[in-house]
Length: 162
Image (cartoon, rainbow, N blue to C red; front, top):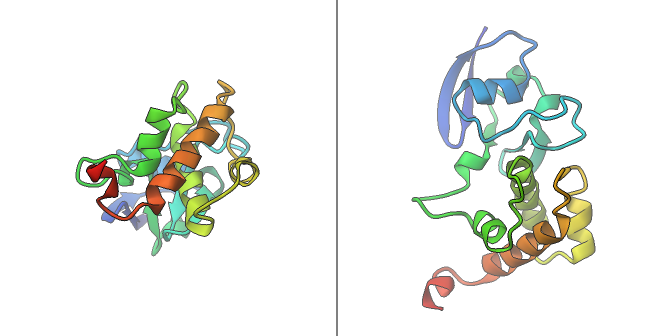
């Protein structure tokens, strides 16, 4: 069946089986930043943002269910060639580790910071608890989210003035 998914602001027409998982449809659309990990929603590497406010594990959702919704993947985070503050903070704090979990971590952290712009370390750890880092780099990931929270609270252009 043909469906239209709006991914990172771009409509993409896809032919999918009704049982196609969203993660597979996203990757078939050429966006490979969303990873396939455990296929059971335990690891979180497939996390995307739905309608700008909800982190969704795309291996638990059928692609047809996403039609009519706005999907944001890691490829949609950077704007105008500039890394999103979360991406920059993961780089700065060495939160990238091997990088496999990074897209899911960033997407989950993005939603966390929308709902709680100044989370405590405990709140960050709880907010990311559905995402696994096989490198066990959690300390640097938490530092990255803390840095991003600070960066996002600065007035626009403040970082450029530093």
